Image 1 (cartoon, rainbow, N blue to C red):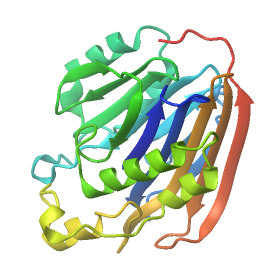
Image 2 (cartoon, rainbow, N blue to C red; image 1 turned 180 degrees about the vertical axis):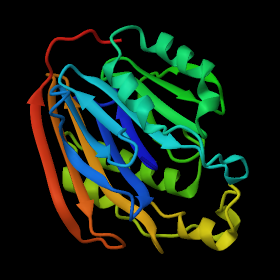
Image 3 (cartoon, rainbow, N blue to C red; image 1 turned 120 degrees about the vertical axis):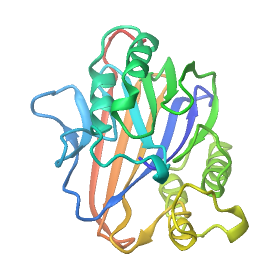
Image 4 (cartoon, helix red, strand yellow; image 1 turned 45 degrees about the horizontal axis):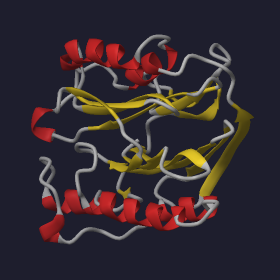
Length: 260
């Protein structure tokens, strides 16, 4: 993912309300979200180039999602794929904090990343730049290509929109998808400096990105209510367009599983 806004144990009816965009090069081969044949408890999309994923949830409520930490001056084109970390977190059966400490010891194999991992009732955050494992308190959070809750314009915009949607008793899923379509670019003085040329920095500043060769490939809305009812919907867009190419929706009840 490249933008995530989520409410974690911060709503009277829902333990998790998660809305995210995945931004990627249009040419990179991808499989839509589905339960994997070789891992039938795992629901996730798949990067067909490296084999990993950017986010997923299991039938037992394990959850993981990753964003890149954008630092073009320290980008290694030979680094290992960060998508394998999401699969590792989703398959792990022990204490997530322990896993993240193990990942910290080998974080240098990867370009910069942020990883949300754990479960819908105990969620952790780790950044390879911050080098600290954090168990999240209940709250509303935003994450893009810097540290958690860094106030980039797109993060502020998404968090504000999510807070407004959550003011209602039952969050409107269409409104959640709608907030992920915001095309407003940040003004020049608001742009971060991540090593991109200013015109490129501006092009990737909206919540929903459309640019030459690169942009928002899909949006995902995930909700888990306090009874363990899961709603997962992914909308995949035609490259460079707001036109929805496919919708992949799944609903199920969480099964008993170690929540750590």
